[in-house]
Image (cartoon, rainbow, N blue to C red; front, side, top):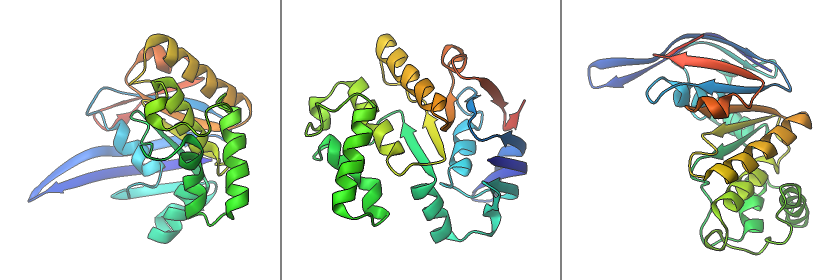
Length: 219
């Protein structure tokens, strides 16, 4: 599914070049459940942004589902982000005035899915994460764990090939973190490829493979 060779990322701060990724070689197969683990500043978020087509590499090769993304323009990368990749973030990123159902429907608006289909798919996604009774609740009416479940449902609603979860338990208490990790494990058992970004070894240990990153190098 993911094949990277010699991927680098360098940021320019005025006349100063700051290398963040230094020749990443990485292969992740379809159906894997992988943690990318590193401390703050290791390059793990930058790597996630490139994997998720949120940023472009400086050099190297990146193939996703057999497609060379080096050749894709911004619109083509936006399509990959919307249709093939689902994102789950630490801070949930839910619209505060929208209901759970409306938040989950949002990616389908950008994908031009007809409204009746959007509604049914969003309901099904929320049912799948155990929130069938909270469709009309707004984020401030939900616990942290419930908000993260809404975010996971939103990530899944366009049936992505890959889910990227960036510190998905970072804002949650211990028990709620266990619940979210159990949900991610269940989703992987259904065949969804999951890449989890974390700095916590206890969280990484619950995945099936751990990739370490330090100073922009994976090992």
